[in-house]
Amino acid sequence: MLKVKFIPQNKLIEVESGTNLLKAADQAGLYVEGDCAGKGTCGKCRVKVIEGNRGDPTDAEKEQLSDSELKAGWVLACTRKVEQNCVVEVPLQRDAYTRKTTMPGGVENLEAEPFVEKIAVKLDLPALKDQVADLERLLIKLDRPNLTVNLRELAGLPALLRNNGFSVTVVISGSRLISIEPGDTTDQLYGIAFDIGTTTIVGSLLDLKTAAVLAVAAATNPQNIYGADVISRITHASQVKGGLKQLQDKVIGSANEIIRDLLRQTKIARDHVYEIVIVGNTTMSHFFMGVDPAYLAPAPFIPAYSRALDVEASELGLKINPAGRVVFLPNIAGYIGSDTVGVILATNMDRRRDICAAIDIGTNGELVLVANGKLTACSTAAGPAFEGAQIKQGMRAAAGAIEAVSYVNGDIELSIIGNTPACGICGSGLIDAAAALLDAGLIEPSGRFINPEENPDEVPACFKDRLRRGPGGFEFVLVPGAKSETGDDLVLTQGDLRELQLAKGAIYAGLMILLKEAGISENDLDQVLLAGAFGNYVRKESALTIGLLPQLPPEKIIAVGNAAGDGSKMALASKAVRARALTTPEKVEHLELSTRPDFQDIFVNALPFRNN
Image 1 (tube, rainbow, N blue to C red):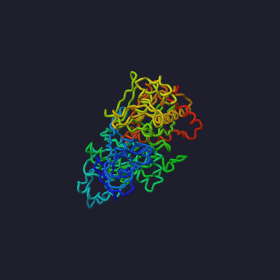
Image 2: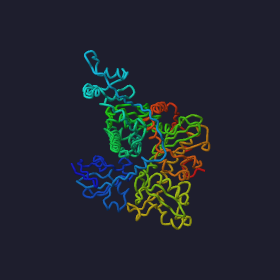
Image 3: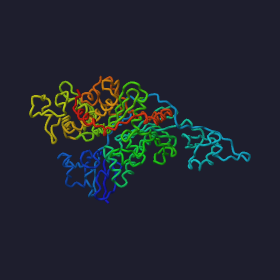
Image 4: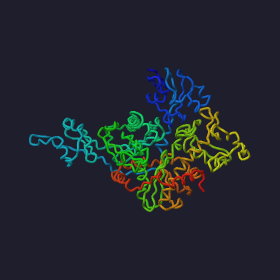
């Protein structure tokens, strides 16, 4: 066994010779980005070898790292194997989670009508003339003789009643008696709503008596070590022994970290959290429940289940009241999950009578259209470009990410999260950058950079040194190395523009198919709702410039925050909304784009940056 010490986290572990540093870091509980699932193609898993284990660079390192980075000891964690004891520096994670937990928009004044109820009871004492068994005595007092009771609660019932003068509080979930507590604890009734995203997991702790949100916490989905997209993760689950269990352990572990954070913030006891309601895409729901998603990847994209699931927290290892219920809301189709159900609930799409589209932009874009009182939905494989993956210097929306780019007074202006030196560009910055360079005349509508060698007069003097030929074609220097955190130029490449075109083309084409099926045009839309963190931070004007959205007046395009998460909170807080959620899938017509002969033509026509 060999020793690997990770700094500055000061984690020391032992691994077998030949283990790559990505797996070693994961074993140490450290987050290292790995969008390509260990193929060595994304270049995001950069760590620095301080002592030992240098050796010659791998082919992937030569491809992805600069000469200066190689000399300084930077390696790719997924391709660098541990061959001797070593010390490795892992860059500190600097996620901007406040963007996920403090987004504007969203639902207000949640309706408090919880599914879980607490009833304080005072029982008559047993006597020779009243020899009713303890459980029956309790159920008679509640006037609910058919409640089911778990063995854990029944085993401790005799002592609990007698030690507390036969005064207890009963916790009931539907037809189940899930907990019996000493005294009157009816003032302590809590639940957690989760949005399990492919990239980010968000949890909200609610006081179920008032439906008030008491705390919110978020974390990066640690499954990303197995790839940035769901197909990579399904492949890992299907082809690696124990892969499904690894993916489930990752997401359950992250959910438990969020639960601990929420309880720490509020000083609430875990045993007083009685319910969790979860939304997520169909693949995430399978992983969370430990259900094999193998047949979601190939056509005809069949999930193992689509209905809502309700299990005991202890079955999944979630650290709330062991008998607490965990409810995963229903999915609509193989690639339209309960997160879309959440969006529909939060935006009242199922009750609207105007013409409105909701778009949740991410690795998998989900779109819903309501027209003529009918709901239709589809999903598009936009790819992870909007999350910063497959972009040369892309990153998630974290400190150091370029999040906004403008063309102002003949120059390019940048906004960087955290006001720190730039170290990459996130999705909103990517869209802004393309729009700004289009406005500056440096990008053609086709998506190509203008050729400064053939058309030098078309390049303004201030950009002559910034638009240059790179390894993969022309590229534009957004931040020179002297001003970046990494010391390297931060660039937007021709390849980045192509990835953006593919992503935005897929979203736009999906919407056009929905409109075509409804027999209407984009001009008939009364509103377009942008859901999710990405939709909340992207500038509408930039999205319109590049043709991501239909050409509507900006005031018709509304950011609605984390609507999926809001829908989860609504279904946790209210029985009535929960009932709506359970029947929503049957109200939605699913359009499978892969079977549409017209999709490819619409997609190709959507690739140019301006749709005129």
